[in-house]
Image (cartoon, rainbow, N blue to C red; front, side):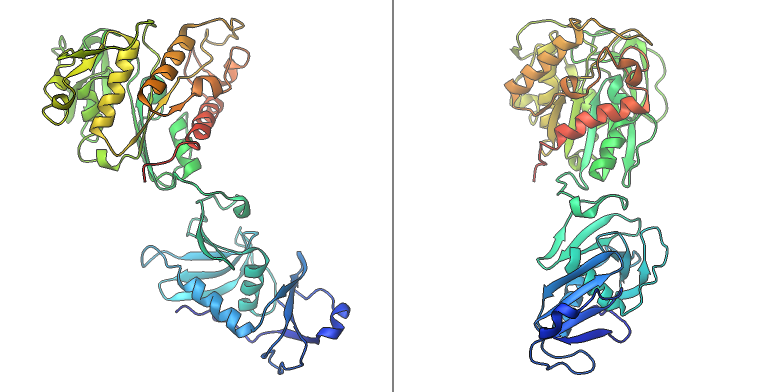
Length: 457
């Protein structure tokens, strides 16, 4: 069991009849109040309550029974918290972020009384009493070595709370269902802003809205898998599954060539890459960007594209369809179970095919549709034409397919807050959020939507 090592206690003793005469205790001190005068000079014995206080908090009367039992109970509670490895150190802070103790492989140690910026606070008194005071005032927060809150300790026991940056208000923290989960993005050029593999701790940088999402939720990993210029339809762009693209062994994009598709490209393939079709509904692209070595780790996939020419054709399934040849050859566990594909020449068919293949390839993952980004217009200009229905129609088709397939939707098009009147603040060209303001605005919509969706426990 970990023990709190500290100096002699500094109790003030007082009969309960003189309670009204007490002032605020000095920092680090407490006042024991006894109705039977049973306490000895060391402050041990029975008492009815004790009063705590310091320079920044008012005196508070708290019901207790035996100070030694209370300290032992707190030591037992702290001893339940252990670093995840033998080298890390956890820090115990009060509700203001002030450090009062540390926990390492050897147990719990008082280390002083420091504010969250590392400046020593001249508190005086017994450090174990400071810890006990903070514990009963507003709980203790156990943080990792980079200042993120991991656990909250209070009279109700040990509670895992959201990992938050040290400057955040720990007391207002809510449970984070996506903490330490793995998120993937899959789609076109707006998704390609997130490209790469990123690991905790994440900090938003550049125009990567995915890293802003990862930072907010404290994700374990972000897998960015976008290819610019591609759509859901097999016929978008150069046709036959879209632009020929080249994928690195880890699933990240190496490059693409918009002059050729997969079938008519005769050039060289970059070393260490696999040639794929760029279309979102391509089985070859899906299985190459999410290789077998990592696909089981993915908890959620955010899917988005808006390069397709809109069509209003209803979604239809085509038995024995072989438009996607790699899908047709995928074997008994995949194509053999379905026996065809959705009509890949249509927008809704392309969306359905993409969702189906992602779900079959990664059955453990929650697949989530994004309805696109709004604010399309001419570079550097505002746009008062709110009747521009191009991307709005694609967004509506995406909403429809979410309902038909029971795939969750984050309606980013309707909630990202980017429009023709403010687009120059967020959109750097015609459609891309290549500004930090645009990154944060779009991420805000994704974060808000993901809060309403739970992982697959």
